[in-house]
Length: 262
Image (cartoon, rainbow, N blue to C red; front, side):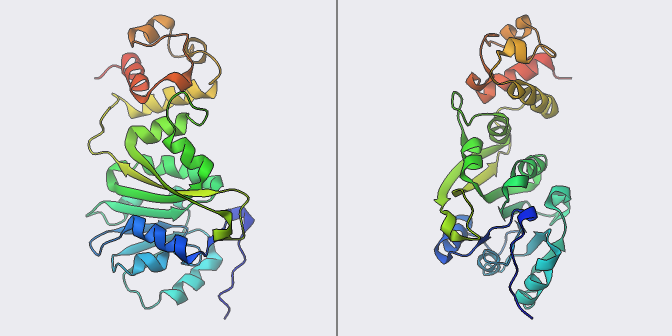
């Protein structure tokens, strides 16, 4: 039976094949036997081989049913691998390896990268670190600072939960089929404890979402449904400022002003 598998557009599949890039990602992750590894979207198993070499228990989460037999054949002699066919966006990662924190790895297609990152951030207490290959544009947004075009909701909420490190870029020719964009590898390391905790993470998330939904408006106008100018000023923030000028600590202070601790 052939191991050939045509990449599917609806799954956003671009398979990594450059051995130098695969090795570089493996060295960045540097898995150990004592780790609990989860790989999202292993594809044809190029990076999986790097992870398997550590001897650590490894769960593969793959949505494409047609890739399952290919992965089963390739890793049939590796008893530490658990293969799970399913949607990572619906996976309860907290149930995997309940005795230890997870190290999550993935080459994430653009169409699910943002919702999947939010899904994992909601389970941050169960995660040791995450290494993802994403479109460079998304990595830029994850790592963006205030007063930049890339800075937005994804930047604020990811940096609320995690230290963000943009590691290196990956050119289109490292994939088959070649994507039209440059990719990059990012490391997200959840804070424990959070350095700047909000009274309610849910309230903070809604506040940040509302602010950036109308990012060209002033805070006074963008947040008029949830806060008045006096409340914004009470948090030490100029109501005439735009959302992209606020640091994470500003958003947390404003959220805490509007949603006091119990």
